[in-house]
Amino acid sequence: MFDHPDFDAHEKVLFVNDAQTGLRAIIAVHSTALGAAAGGCRLWSYAADADALTDALRLSRGMSYKNAMADLPMGGGKSVILGPVATDRREAVLEAFGRAVDTLGGQYITAEDVGVSVADMQIVARTTKHVSGLSAEAGKSGGDPSPFTARGVRVGIESAVRARLGRSELAGLSVAVQGLGHVGMYLCQELHEMGANLVVADINPARVSEAQIRFGAIGVSVDEILTQAVDVVAPCALGGTITEYAARYIRASVVAGAANNQLLTPEAGRILGERGVLYAPDYVINAGGIIMVQGEISGDNDADLIRARVDAIGPRLDAIFAKAKSDNVITNEVADSMARAKLDAARRMRARIAA
Ligand code: NAI
Image 1: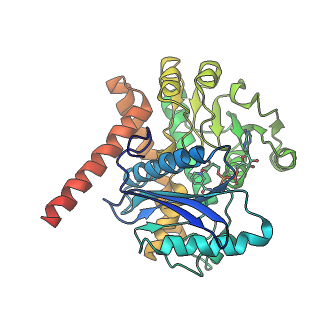
Image 2: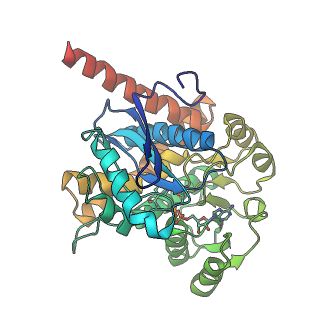
Image 3: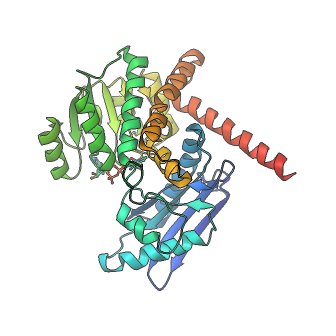
């Protein structure tokens, strides 16, 4: 475990096996240096258990970096429930998951992620209070964080387009959106309202039809979406879709989307950089959801205030793009070193306080 390539000094990794309900889950707490480790719960059927562990570790570290870069007083963690979960067992499994979260006594705060809904989190909330992403009250943020994530991605695309194409508006720009789930569909709506032209793909044809009808999007196959002749590619499906192969054949000038861990390998990022494709580091551009969740956790959740905080993703990316250009370093490496510096400073501060 400690030699796992993605272990990266995790503070704690909890493996849960609940014989009564059949729950099998992994809760990874990467860092609590900046506060309680916050990050969603993913329910997914992995090809192998080892893939679930890798996913949990990579996503958890990503949350530490994401929260640090968004200047949130929260650490990073993530959980995965190993699917499939039969419909008639789902409620019991989610309650058992809540009990597992509760054993960490608030070190980890869960929320929804891929495969888990607001309604699921209401069930988790029966057995632990360390849960967010519950239903919103009127005039407050809360519930599904996806609209805020999509807003942040749109703001991030604007920043990337300014930096790479020298354009200040999205009108007339073409964007290929990979994945039309919670975030992808809201993102299409935002981009459509700003006059962008959309090319879309999803493994679910009904979602493609919806985007065609609502936004006049052009639907293409999932194998072709990343290599469309467009200005921007926005990966909004699962992580790891920017393989080294894809990085060589992407024709867009910008890659900027919501998915976590978009680059399958560090080499994929280097190839994009060498080819002059500007990559918006995923955990910086997709922080809108966690910014909303943090507002909900702290009770500081006026929707206008949260939107203003999400919009700060734009200037944050402007600074990363400027530093990458001036230092001739790729954008994800700039973001990683900024995030690590923030975490190291928080760890040192905590050690000083403890001493
Ligand atoms: P979702 O599960 O609602 O949507 C994912 C969509 O991608 C589904 O419509 C699915 O059919 C489609 N898809 C899966 N494989 C595909 C493929 N190979 N090609 C094309 N489409 C494919 O998930 P959600 O919430 O929209 O999240 C999308 C991504 O953004 C995930 O990677 C998630 O971790 C990340 N993210 C989501 C946040 C949120 O607020 N929901 C926050 C930050 C990151």
